[in-house]
Structures are given as C-alpha cells and as structure tokens.
Length: 511
Image 1 (tube, rainbow, N blue to C red):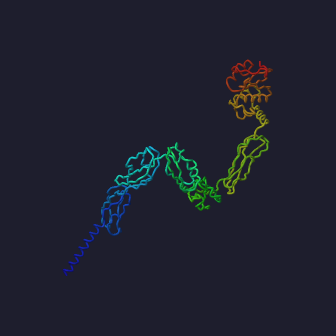
Image 2 (cartoon, helix red, strand yellow):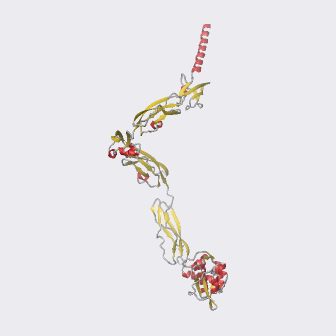
Image 3 (cartoon, rainbow, N blue to C red):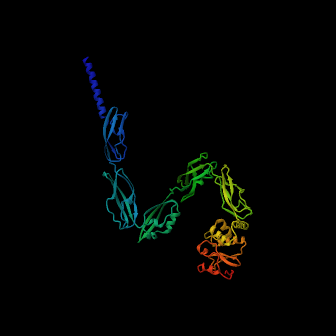
C-alpha cells in the first residue's frame, strides 16, 4: 500500500515538473532582420500558437534596437525581448557610362538603383584620371550605417563619342545624340545616321574619327516598346441616345511607329442614368498597349430648346413684321426644333414698346417660352398730336411757353436724333437743339412765326420769335446765361453768347 502511494506521489511530482518546464521554456527571445515582419512564431520555442496572444505595438520593425513584447498563454503572462538587427548589405545596380575628357566624376552617374533598409552612403574608392581618352575601371562602394557593405565595378569610357548607344524604333537618331559636345558632330557621317533611321531593328556600327583616332560606335536599334499616347475626354448623352463610336471618347491618339487600334473594354449600360467609368485601350502594331479611363454621363432630358435671335426689333407703324426672320430654335437632344410666335399683344398701329412671345417644345415635352421686345416707332402724326396735347395746357404767352420748356426739359448732351421734339417731350431731357425745336413747335401751335437760329460754330441753338411786329431772340435752354434777358435784341443776344456770333445774313434783324 505504501509502495502504491509512493508511486502516485512521484507521478504527481513528475507531472508538475514537466508542466513547469513546458510553460517556463515554451517562449524565447527573438532576433529579426530589419524590415522583416515580427510575428508570434518568432517567440515560440516549441508547440503550436493556439491560445496565445501577443502585443507587438511597441515594436518598430523599421528601426534597429531592442524591444519587449507581452505574451499571454492561458492564465500566464510572459515578457520577451526581440532584437531588430541590420546585417544585410545594400543591393546596388551600376552601369557603364560615356563621358568626354576632364569629366568630373559623380558617383551617382554610375548608379542605376540602390536599395537598403537603413541609411547608406555611396562613394568611389579610388580616383580616376579623366584627362585622356580610354576605358577606366571605377570601384563603387555602398555602405549602410551598420557597416554592411557592397562593392561593384563599372567602366568609365572617356571619349568624344559614346561607344554604345541604344535607340528605340520610331525615335529619330541625331548625330548630337552620340557625342558629348556639339562641336564634335562632324566626326560622324550623316549617311550612317540616315541608314540607322531607315533601317530595321538590330545592331549597327559606325565610325567616329577625331585627331587621327577612330572609335567604333555601336548603336542598338530596339523594338518599339512604347505604347501609344492616348488622351480621352468625357462624354454626356441623353437617356435613349447611344454613342456613335468609341472615337467619341478620343481627344487624341498617336503612336511614333504605326497606326493604333482602339478598343472599348467597358460594356456601356445605357439604362443607367448617371456617370459610369469607361475604359478604352489603344494598341499599336507591335502590341504595345495603354488603357485609359474616362466617364460617360447619361442624363435625363429636362431642358427645353434654346431660342436664339430674339434681339430687340424696331419697326415703323403699320409695317409688316416678319417675326421669324433671323430666329431659330435648337434642342441639345433633338437638334433643330420648330417654334411658334404669339404677337397678339403687339399693336402695330400705335407707337410703343410691346412683347412677342416665342414658344418651342422638344420631343420629351420640355417647353421654352421667351419674349422679344418689339418697338413700334412714332411718326410725324404722333409728334404733332403730342405737341397739340402739351400746347393745350399752356397759355399763348410766348414767355410762359418758353418757361415751360426750360422747367420741364432738363439739359443733357443728347440732340434728340431725327425727331428732337418727340425726344424732348417724351424723355424730358435734351441739349439746346432739343429745347429750341420743342419751343419752336409749341409756338407754332399757338400761331407764332418762329425761326431756329444757331451760332456760326453751331455750339448753341435758340429761337427768333415775331412779337408785336418785330423779330426778337428768345432762349428756352436752362441756365443763367440764357435766362439773363427774357426777350432780346441782336445786341442783347450777342452780349450773352460769350464772344460767339451768328451769320446775320441768314436771319432777320432783331431790334
């Protein structure tokens, strides 16, 4: 019995020891290369990662250093260390270059690409004398801040001409492309250049001679690998319409070698009102292609036609009006549309300003109505009626009539056009010509004999009125100079004109 009990106790102790060892040694510290992801598996010594969680928020995988992480396994918490190291040397791609004598070496001229997770520097490990023609070996060193180093070799060709040159089919080779300085282009024969430009893809050789030294230049003409240049534009159409062709989306397309095949990749949904992306591919004869994206906008027709040509129309009384002349109606969806004119509000027998109404309706039922100003000109009869109407409110006294004109027609620089009387009485403004003609018309309506008179330089107009058996000067223009003397003789009139005079042979004498 004691022996059995002993065995049981030993088994329990063994289980405890084994479990303790398992839990205490399951996790380990970790070392990770800079730039690599840090994961839970980096810390597990054995077993699976089930029922384990880890907090990596304090780890910066892009920065060398030591970081601590928290791991939780069942009810146990562990803290482990991860060391981020950089032991990987930089990668570098270099190229041979061609330069003219006395070239100042720049290490970056030799480098195609450098990659490293850390900061790095590049330099050349030995000086090179570039004063003479020749091929020189250049040792390029790139080293990061953790002293990981990569060394590459490149060749510096010192010559007036480039020993190797590559040009893609479709591009034009020029002599200056092959030399370092323009003054050396005559070392190359233009016929050799023309042969390459006209020739097929392949390897060409030509000679460049300077100072009795000849260099063989290799030109590689490579296949066209450049896709066409494609520029698209957006398109808007109305619901129910379709684009005519893919070319509707093309603003421009060109290729340096061949014609271009245009293909629409997108299937257009003409039932979808709104914008949709359209992909179009352009491919040249060499198979080089480019795909660009634009938009097609399908909209509902809610706008009526546009009616144009509705400028103000001025006509004479009782004239015949062609309301449709010069007018057109156009709808963005339907094109040219018909229109109707409602001129019922225009009274062609009476002067005034009226409106004619133009209406056009598209196939979708959208209606546009616009109005047009119609001005019916007055005639001489209208002027006479207006003069008679105004005169009927006035006495027959010439001075009263003159004062009415002065008070009711303000002064401006407008001479009243072809009918100063109408202009003055309807607009209540005008210059001295307007005042003189209005005063003349009102006086004649009252039975006076009158004449319109002006200075020799035509800078002022006024009236001569036959009063009480003799002619007198009267001036209806507002202003103190013209109202200084009411009824004037020639001498009095002259005294108010500031040195101006009139042709006295044309008008009677006023005493």
